[in-house]
Length: 81
View 1 (cartoon, rainbow, N blue to C red):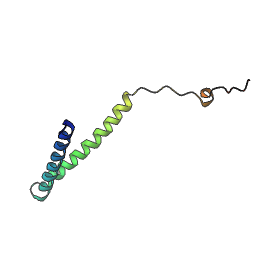
View 2: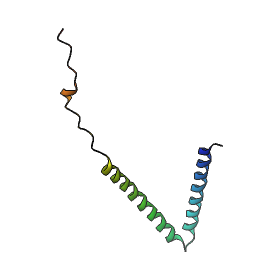
View 3: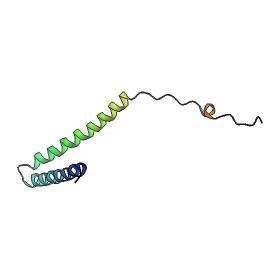
């Protein structure tokens, strides 16, 4: 098994484990609220992290050079023959 396949199998097993843990937390009355709070926190942090990454990318990317007008880009035709 290659390194990528081993990593993929580890991620798969970890994800299945987290799903099982979450399911167990939802069915144990003492931990139901904890499970929902964890999911809400992960969702908020994930979405805000993506938004922050987009903002960082927009703030640090240099402005592209403006493209000239279409007339300037067209090459002169060879009608002067």
